[in-house]
Length: 326
Ligand code: ATP
Ligand code: MG
Image 1: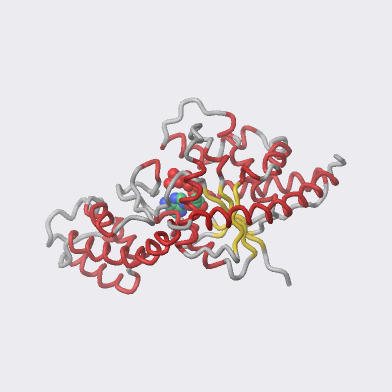
Image 2 (image 1 turned 180 degrees about the vertical axis):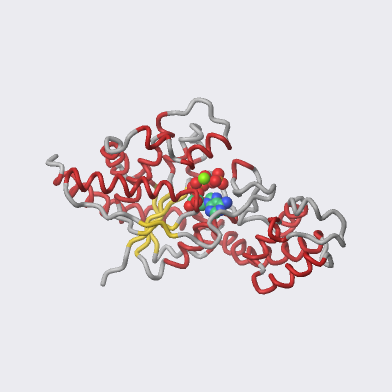
């Protein structure tokens, strides 16, 4: 039986944070052995929130370095830029006829962005970015989409568009399923529900040990635990969430120490810092190696683009055929 296909992407807005890792990238790395994997540098999607394109290419390189440093293997996973494959734009145009504006306005993730970024006048391309995302996924006939929780509504819209297209023109697309990790929405250092670059509450995959320490030092904890011996409530503490992910083996000890008051917040944070740094160390090491050979990264992307173009063209041939266009 042939392998199922994964499609997932990220916007090249700079270096990645641990939220990107635990919500999506970790799953990409885990699943690349069992799925045919396509990973998209979603460069056009950057324009939804920033029209300045001067840094997109550099940010794409930085992001791919993070992907590979964390364990994505270009021999198993295709890596390519959306902007280099014209079929994304073409399928997006067709799909934009298959969804109502009311449906797009109901998207809860879009509403969250409006809140987080204080958007007063939404541009047309931002309202429609989910349609472009649907084209990104279905162009490669992605069946599984490993993403963070905020992307689930987009996969749902993709399913609806696939269904609408198939009903209208004939069966071309399968409806994809989202694949979530156990940490599909990692909290930010400020206690916000989501770690996000735009909220400035992140730990980067490339943060050096001292930086992680400084950041964690300022992280919010249980507001009712003021003095060292006060009993704490791990279930409301974001540092405890990080322990669950990065210090899994000691989590019950941390929990009981916090609850009894024996473990103070500063000590608890330092234990967490140590574990996060242990996790980041090999990633930073690999990143530094790759930074010395940027041409290799560029070649990986060029190779991915050559291969992705073939798949994209073949899907569009099918689309044109069932639509009696061409
Ligand atoms: P940010 O949200 O930091 O501004 P972005 O919007 O540029 O970053 P996306 O391309 O939207 O990043 O996200 C890439 C992937 O990472 C998506 O699958 C998204 O769900 C996931 N992701 C981003 N932040 C988190 C988080 N805090 N927890 C879990 N998954 C996350
Ligand atoms: Mg985002």
